Length: 313
Image (cartoon, rainbow, N blue to C red; front, top):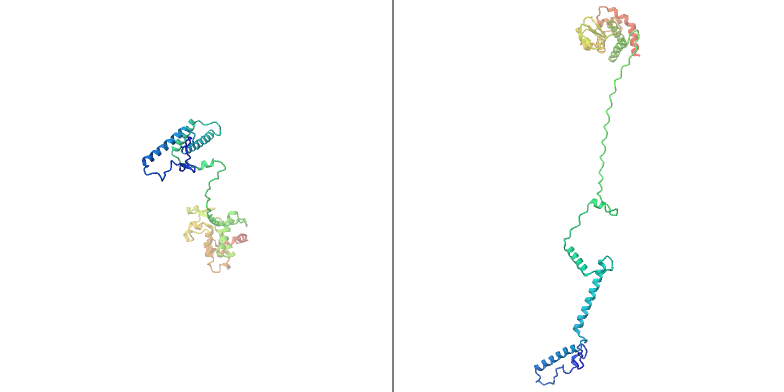
């Protein structure tokens, strides 16, 4: 410390080395003991403290650094408080009080202390209501499957052709329709057998003599009346167009009541007679029927011829 009351410049180039009283002299006597050195440091310390009291405005290195640090912290604190006040009131310029800052800090701490919960999963219904900006969730496209080949439709079974109904031939030669129908049945049965025209005329003439071309049942055989018939006779057990007798071996009653069957029975016997085609009609018919009136068949030859020709036309 100088005599004028100012502190020595400890940071200067001169420093304490320029002072003759701070430097240990090499020429001093060995008699300067440790007590002298201690006394010198005590005086210097006292000098320094007294100088600070006499000149409070003098520069002190340690305190200067403390002052600078304190000023920086205060500036930073003021800047932080102004920013908090500016953002806490939604853009308003009203300053925030210390109580409001404390309350917000406490609320923020309480919020941070709560357990964080995972957001609830969204459902398709929620995403559908969020608006048109949300793209729809992709859906799996159905894989194309091979279409089964249609089964071929079964071919319809051909309908059976109905049997042609025999054409009803108009009566000729003074016959009625029932007689003409029976004559037609005789001619068709003989033609199916391959019998020539002469044999067909003999058969029709014989039926004209025996039954007048009506299919007779027998009063003696009530069974015969169970089948279609047009008249009832009483000549023993004779039945049908040719008045054939079941008792003589011509066949069963139900068969002889069928005009086609009765015709085949007559012609089967006729074609077995030798030379029947060259015989007189009445003789050929008598050879089959063995009637009590053998000459009666001849009277029907001309009429039978007209009927057969009308049917074969």
